[in-house]
Length: 437
Image (cartoon, rainbow, N blue to C red; front, top):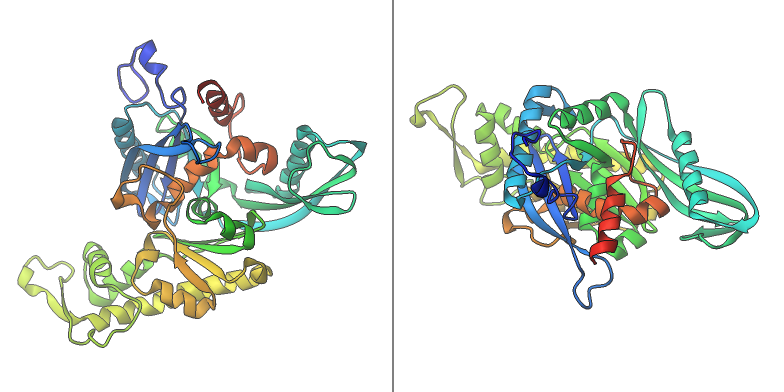
């Protein structure tokens, strides 16, 4: 039998697909790259707690095409890039991918908080009551032309007692929850989903990019005490504020590493590929006394003769990079200040994403944002190769962690957004855990 991607599979082989093997598949659709990770849930080792461990068994990544600032602008080119990334991960893992969880960073995300309440009449709180509140919250968050990514309870209240984490089994007359929701433009969501479905894949959940990044780079104390995650991608720089174990604010700035590259290309009249190379090898947001003496050969646009390259001091490259990096963090500062909850986020910032690896970005962020800043990389996923164990893969690793936690999140946090009817894949994963661990 031929599968949707042209592979001959027997019935027995199809039973060994990703879902059957208890695997999770994450697809990061970014401006500069498409990344696909396939992870297997392994039984926990002695002393590591009751939760299964995520181990990467398949990795695929391709340069992004047809995508700008996280949004689809060319359906065919984006589809081709997604197919290539998924196929590479499938070959490495020796499985056929069907269900994927994807990230969303485009669509002008909006963050809103509100309170929903139900009257129980003095009976015990059940899981269905929690789900009913979450459903009410999602309805409250709905706006014309916008789709809800997350509706997360920040805490429950029973008859005036606040900050309850797990209200199940408690007797309540008035039962309420404070929720936080992230919404984005519906058209952006539909185009992302359509592009993935054209690859014969099923989108089972959509996750706000910096939220996913936070799940992979933050330690538990940072999530609990408060921290700000800044995910510096190629097309956007996204913000997620965590407090008391959950997401309390999210936003996006439409500037990222690709804009720095474009500035270098324009300022030095060099091709974009050469500008990216110079940014990676010589780029810095900090001035050094050596910069005026270090010379860099800059190939010129349209010139075929290698001898036509122009030598420029490294200080010129730094002078182009620094203003754009400062602009990004100034905009981030304004968004955080406008949220009204800057003070709840402690004094901790975790900088991640591909553009965060630029030399000097951490120091500029610390100066302009007046907070402690550290660089974040995925810390809760095993089996990552050295070349991908960095901030560039924080989002896609966070998608896996979100999917792993989804049985708990579905009942407690309500932040996994199914887009298909029927039995959800995370329920199948949960059943697999019961049968195999």
